[in-house]
Length: 255
Image (cartoon, rainbow, N blue to C red; front, side, top):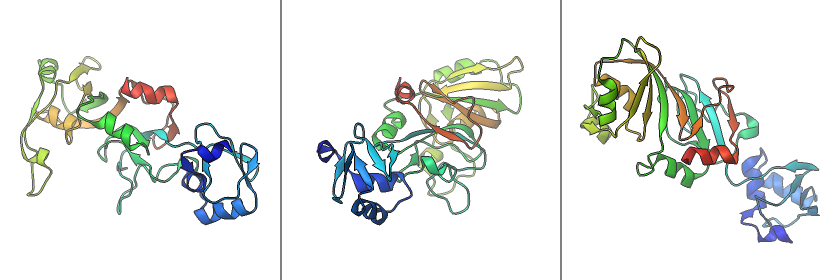
């Protein structure tokens, strides 16, 4: 059978993408309640082509896929982590129908930063878009505590040197303990009062956008990520909600 030549164990794929355990899946195998391309599957080690085979689970179509790519509009107060003992995470916010094992946020936003978070189980893809060598741009909207000074656009374009963060402790991350020279960034102002700015960066230094403004005596009062690569946050996606990305949308991230 064609599905026997696939790359993924069927029981593992079903358990990873449903609420069923492997034992539950094996029971369904034994009852003949799992069909692949119209044929009953009873062997526990059967394999399936996730891209092409049709799977029915108890008579209902089951859309299996190797990788998931989700866009979330992260609200404030939520951390970009798989788990956290004290605070809700972006994974905690996922609806049941989009949950599967192995999902993680590709990159981090601060607890109080909002906007576009990409959640996936594709480690290679996440590495590519986060790698400093790739320079995939991330676009942010920053609101400032006071008008920005003249010359800031040019200063960002040259590359800001970040001083070490205040209140550093021994053992803190290396980029917090020394000056960091940022890659050139694009800055444009939103409105005439120069208290809101759109920033495009191509690296991921710790607290980078906030520290770039802080180097010029400005405090970021709110920060929102609007875009990753060529893909903008869906304006119809409410805070805390997420949705799957299409193949074209995923491809647009890398440009």
